[in-house]
Length: 168
Image (cartoon, rainbow, N blue to C red; front, side, top):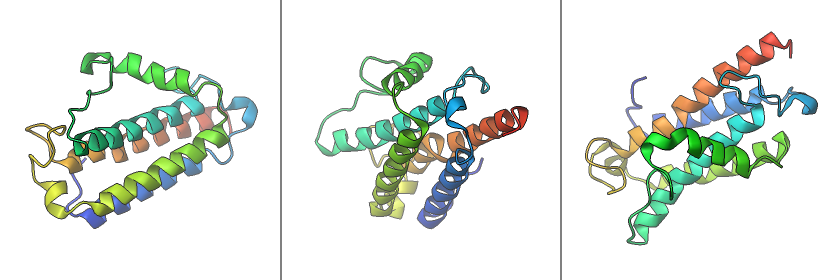
């Protein structure tokens, strides 16, 4: 997937991917929202918990660096080769929440994330070395894309297949 070429394109892509994914949950019956039969043995609630978790990490890395501190990456207590455990922590943290509650949280996280992106300059988004947490190889736009647009599209495909298989 090519990177967006401008901040406006990035914002549009995030909004579009978010809206399409969120829309998939409008007709999921409450008795199936925790059904773990989506590809990867996850549920609709798990999918949203995962997206919320990564949005919070992304925003947290930024907030931590702005305080002059070094963020734990990907998260405190986790290494990059433990992303499955990290995902499970997102699922566990939200296990008591309904799909409706998670959709509301997801909406709030997206709004916060969009406000953050809007506050960034083109240089901050597209030039490497703008944040220590982003490392030496990727500009912020790449980090944002791989934690929003790409997984939202992938999740939407999984949900659509599950809904089709279950005639939802």
